[in-house]
Length: 130
Ligand SMILES: [Zn+2]
Image (tube, rainbow, N blue to C red; front, side, top):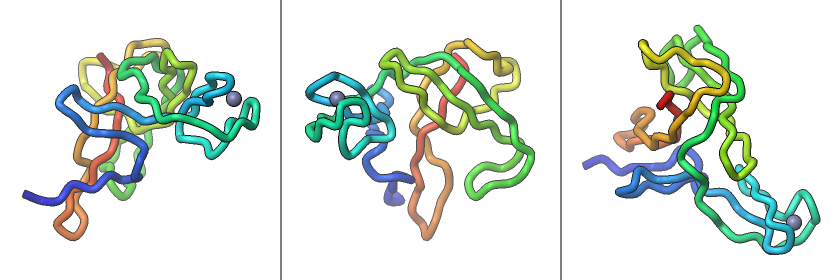
């Protein structure tokens, strides 16, 4: 079986529950950051703890591109998904034919293989319409 390599180390975890994005949370004021911050951008406290984010959120904005990119054949979609933790995540979106994107619709996280490089599977996160 090919080795699975995350496209960006530490941004998500895989698991039998479908995995989750990993953010960090300020131990002083509770602010949550994704991608993780080195120190709290709200109160400058330096102690933050890793927390998994909710898998479901709502679509804030999206765009559909018709240019090829390294892992996504055209057309492919990118967008912002708002999670209940008050975090806005920029991520690739999965295009599902009978579920067109609509601002405010419910989206769900999927951890999946994006492509292969040097016989390694590159794993990343996308959001798909629920
Ligand atoms: Zn803080």
